[in-house]
Length: 433
Image 1 (cartoon, one colour):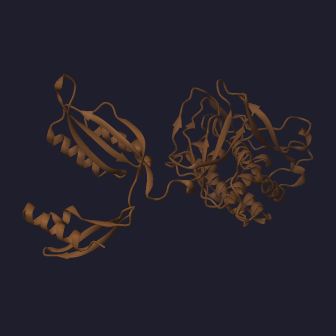
Image 2 (tube, rainbow, N blue to C red):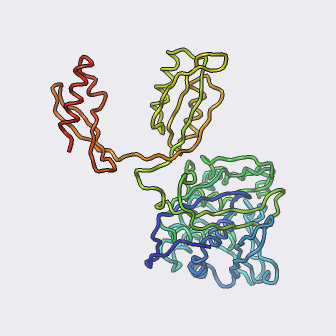
Image 3 (tube, rainbow, N blue to C red):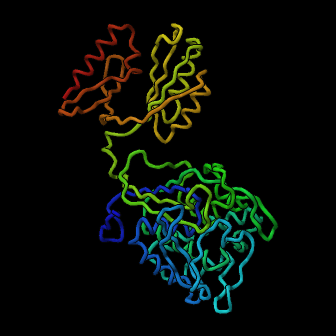
C-alpha cells in the first residue's frame, strides 16, 4: 500500500483530504482503526499518546487484523486486564458507549475512569502528548460535552459523561486526536450517514436511535435509511465528525488517491460489511489552477413562455455555484419548439442548483455529467475612453500573446452599435502588448 511521504519535519509534503465512507457507520474505534489501516506509520505516535493518558491497569491496546463481510479490516480496542485471553472488543453498535449507564470497573484491578468533563480535560492536558494531540482530543471532547449539556440542560462544567465513562472511550478520543493532529491541515469529508433504527437502553429508559446527544452532533449531516436497524453512529463517532467535517463538504471531484483503510466493528450487519473506509487523497495533485472540473447540467422545456424562460434564466444565472448559463432553441417531439437550458456548475453546489432548476422551471427531469475544462487566467485592467473609464479583461494565450476584451456592461453605455464597436476595437487594440 502506498502511503503519503513524510517531509522529515513531522508533516507530509502534500495537501491531504480524507474522505470517510460510513458503510456500516462510525464509532471512535472504527475511525481509529480505519485511519491506522490507511496510515500505519501513525501507529507508534498513537500508542505513545495512549500510554501517556491511560494508566497501565486500564488495559492493553490491541490493533488487530480480521474480516468483516469477507473484507480484510483492522480493529482497535482497549483490552482490560481480565479480558486479555478473550477476543478484543470493538464497536458493535450496541456497544460500550452506554448512553447514560456509567460503567464501573471491569474488575477490582481496573481503576474507574473519570466521568466529569473538567476531570477528563485535566487528565488530557496533564499528559505529555505529541504536538497537537491534546488540542484535537479536547476539541472532540468539547463537542460531545456541549451536546450532553444541551440534552440535560446543565452547564458544560457540570456534565458527567456516561458515553465516555470508561477507559475504552477515552482511548478512542485520545487516539483520534493523535491521528487528526498528525495530519495537520488536512481537510475532511464524509459520505451520507446511516440513520439506523430501533431503541437504545439508557438510564433514562429506552430512547430512539440515534441517541439524543448523537442527534445534536449530527445536525447538518445527511442521514439515510439503508434498512439496517441498530445504533450506526455513536456519540464519539458523531463528535469526531462534528469536530472535523464541514457537513456540506464532499469528496474531491479530482484528486490522487494515496492510501485507503478499513476499520470495522464487531457486529455483523445483514447484507453489508460493518466497516468505515478512510480514503486519503492528495488534492495538490489536482490539475493546475487553469484546469478544473465542472458539472454540465441540462434540461429542456416546451411549455414555458418566453417571459417565463427569461425570468427563470436570470434567477438561475444569479445562483451561487452557476458559472455560466446558455439557452438554445430547438424543435422537439411533435415538432414543438423547445428551449434547452445548459449550465456550468460548481461540483460542490450541484445538488442545490439542480433543485432550483426543478423549482424555477416546468421541467420534470434534469441531466448532468462531469466535464474537465481549461480556463485562461484573467486579470482586470482599466482604460480611459470617451465615455469615461472602461474595464477590460486581459488573458495571456498559450503562445504568450495577450488579448483583451472590454466589459460588456461598460461598452453598453455608448449609444449606437457603430460607436460601441469602434470604442471596443480602439480600447482592445491600443492596449495590446
